[in-house]
Structure formats: C-alpha cells, structure tokens
Image 1 (cartoon, rainbow, N blue to C red):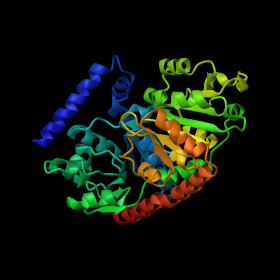
Image 2: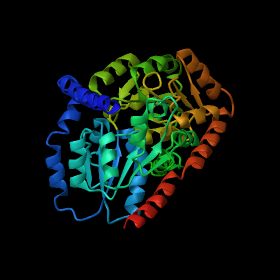
Image 3: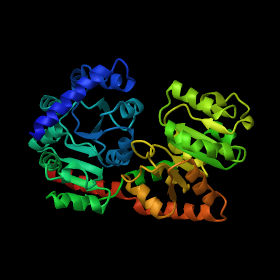
Image 4: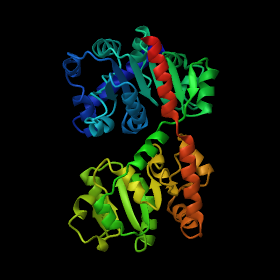
Length: 417
C-alpha cells in the first residue's frame, strides 16, 4: 500500500507540473528540461569507453555540498567521467556548464522504467546521492544491479517518516544504500535504531567547500568601489519577508554602514519592488559600474553566483529564508567569521544550531529583535572580534568529511575492480 501511494504521488506531481508549466517558470523548466531526455543521454554516452561515476543533487545547495567530493574524486580517479544530475532547475540552470562534470542532465522522474533505461545508458561504477535524495526506483535498481550507491552529508530527524511505525517502505529505500555518511551522531543513531547499520558520521562536506571557496575569493571591483573600506552589512538569499524585518535596521544605519543585498531570486519584478522599497539610496549591481557610488548606501545584487565571494566584504551578515521554509546557507558567511542573524526557522540545520549555541549567530522573531541583537554586537567593544575568532575556529574544526569519504570510495572501488 505505501508503494501505491508513492506511485500515485509521483503521478500527481507529474500532472501538477504539466498544469503549472504555462504559468510557472520553474515548472516549465522542469518539464522542458526532460523532453526527449533519453535520446540526449544515449547520444551523449554513445561513444563513451570510460568508467562513469554518477553524482546526484536535488538543487544548487546540494551541489555545493557535493562539489568538494566531485572535485576530490576527479583528482583521485582521473580516468573516470563524471555524470552530474539535478532534480530542480535552480541547480541545473545555474550549473549546467560546470567544468567539473563531463555530463550534466536533469534526473528523469522516478519510475521503474526510467530507472532501468537510465542505468542501461549510464551504467555507473558508483553513484553518490547528496543529502536528501531518496528515490525508490533508482535506488532499488542500483541495488538490484549490485552498483554501489552512497548517501553523503545526510541528516535525519526523529519526526521523519523513516522513523515512524508506518515508515517501513521508506526505511526499505534507505537500505538500498551501500553506505550512508551522516552529518552528525544523532542522525547515525536514528538510522541504527531502525536497523540500518551501514552508517558513518563523516560530517558536512559544505565545511570543506566553504574553506575551499574562501581561499580562492577574487576581488569584485564594483563592490570594492561601493564599500570604500566602510563596515558592510551583508544580506544573503533574502526573501520579501526578510526584507520586511531588515528594513528598520537598514533605515537606522544606512548613513553609517553600507548594505549589500543578494535576493534569493533575481526576477526583474522582485528586484524592482526591492529597489522601490529601499528608495533613492539603493542601486542595482548591473548599473553600479557607471554610477558615482558614494551617493548610494545599498547595493542590490541582480545576478546569481556571487554570494560566496560577497560575504568576504562583510562585517556582519543576515542569511535569509528562516521566515519561510527554512534557513539558507550560513556557512558561506561563517567561514569569514561574520556575526550572523536570521529568522526563527533554523532548527533543521545543525551548523546554525551550533553557531547559535556558540553565540556567533542570533535568531530573531521580528525587526525589533534584529536591531537589539545587532546592536549588542555592533556597539559592545570586542564583541565582534570574539565572534570572528570563535566562528573561524568552529568551521576549521568541522572540516574533513570529503577526505574520509574519498578514502572509503578508494577502498570500495578497489574491491569492485
């Protein structure tokens, strides 16, 4: 019966995409990106004679989590070709030209026939699923074919269906993994409590990624001209609900602090609305190169892909999403030692909970709490430096998941040879 519900859910999702695609850009991209997909796959793999490793990521965040493992794998196994698949257009459309993979596709929707056809074409020596992806038919087919499949940077919570009395079908999906690498001990213990023993606590590969990114940050001339060595309050991955909470702080401090705002979505209508809200002191990045930037105190980023570098200019950072479905990536800011502020929906993110406990991050419920929390850091002598030192030490201490996973992969592939 659970499998029937799973199949019905997949069919309903497919129908919903079809209905939404004329009106919703994301749904449209998800459908059009999968048109004639198997013919494109067959053409791409037609003459391939090299072994293939398959990495699958739901979206852009999971890609950044998997990226250090992809790149470490390429160094360790140069004869392999990398297939990278995405479920969501927010990953595929941004990284479809990523140089670290020879093949980049949307993942065909989960079904028994799609899984068979996909693996018949690709025939990976190893599959690696990043964080949250648990597709029944793909994982079952990989298991049936004795193709090793790993889950990396996985994190689990007691309220998930895997740990409910009625979650047998979902637990069976997890048992198809050759090994699961969790972010924390609590996740490993949850899995072990339901009889899933092939588990290791490796940590979160995003720590490796952000350290790698921070070491390679390059200057952005427009941002440097805007900042002019002033303190900078960096706002990353913001939504309208975040801006509503931030606006009183921006109005209070915009004469003494520069603000850089990178919205999570950069649709023209959203950028225009944001600029109208912020008023005459705000300018968009794409127009800043021709402007006298001393006249502006808010820079609005209207492109994607700069955020991790932008944090290097920050003195403080607000990370968006936690007044909605959930907090976005805090580690991109934490690696630079920035005091962090965000909304209340952060409990699903271990690193955010850690940073709150270390008094490096400050969750807030509204605009008043944000100003109060900010001023405790901004106005108290030495507070920011203490946070910076603690935060940088925390990030470095958590690194190393990639090295552990690659070492295990070397052993696994050697035994499969």
